[in-house]
Image (tube, rainbow, N blue to C red):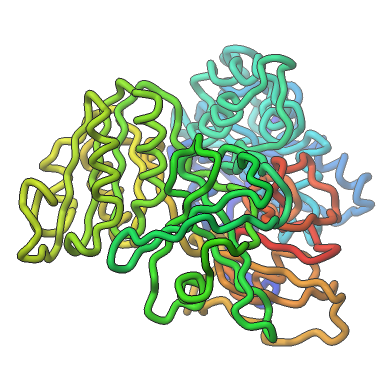
Length: 589
């Protein structure tokens, strides 16, 4: 019979790491005597990052004495103490390849249910002084697991652990962990896992994402997009010259460029919502300027149309507006992006403000081309008619849809603008106005515009009952950083590294969304560490090539890995936490 060897608790504290401060509760210490297991925690315990740890589904972390013994041999260490792997309960027995998600156990007075494997996180490596530990836990199939508390009660070292119920599908912790993090992802196993009621919502969401993309021909797919959404594979690598066929005004401040192949052959079809990345050379003495612009034309067209807002002091938009002419060429990377129109029968809400109309206009084109029977709402905000791009184009597309509704809001309509013809309402598209429109339930919403506009629209739609999983947004600039447990302070704009490294390799790394190009030097370590040195917003969790949180689109170039990731990323992407550039590289961050 399995037994409880130690109960370990600890409260969050600040820990210095790599010149920064991490707020973490992974330092656990064994305690003597009984401890109360409550719905959210053991008494005396806490987590520093509640987004990734803790909560009802992750109230208690379990690790096994057998795994301690394994790591002592594997790492050639004899200094381990109970709680060092961040677990609340150290047990003799309950191996990861025996315990199933959904199993229920009585320990002392309390009853627990297994909910998920351990979250892959850099902090276990920080605690153990072994940076590769998150990858090792997965690759050696020894993650440990979380339990929720079904019946609160006292537990203490020495308690027997009694299994009182088995989980449906009888899928072990090691199996579930491998489904997400290891290569393969067979859809039959994914379907089995989704039938386990006890599996935590976070893991259900990640496995469902894999199931949605599973190849049901051979039962597997290449590349792990469970934790993150990866862009479809690019139609070509790097940049290629495209010919500027036409330049047309769309409003007082927006103009469009139609691009085609230099040999007049059809370009590969883009998907509705994707963007193009363009490399410009406004100044021959400086590094190229790289910018991304949404495709606003029909996805099935043989050419691409991108639309650009002329910013008063915008380097790229001014260059495109004043110096690029029809008949010239531009260096363009293949269509990329994850802001994609999903195939479904649900109603569609397309919400935009200003130049944010570009990707959702491509979606409207796609819906009109397929003569969809879906309910389609087009909601757009502009200052006035002169600053309203694509007005006639959108009206024509909407006229072809049998279940379309349009709401155009002008915040400051001109005297020439016609209420009821050019625009629907005067004022802004506020959350209150959206709620008053009563959007259809079960809709998929696509939002693009200024950050404040998107925040307002997301809040309004959630208030109307739309789940966050059905609300999709497109950010034109750098995306928000995700740095779990890190203390946040003043956020600096991206910049050249404070300490220039002498003897650079000759290659460069361009962060496209941040508008920054930096010489590469091996002493930076990894691409992630270079980005951090430049205050480029980054997203990461394990830092060892397991979780794919750092997965980033490669717009040009390729990377070398050290260590090799547990599973390679999707085609055309890179895991920046464990990679370096052998030559010039352009990343979509």
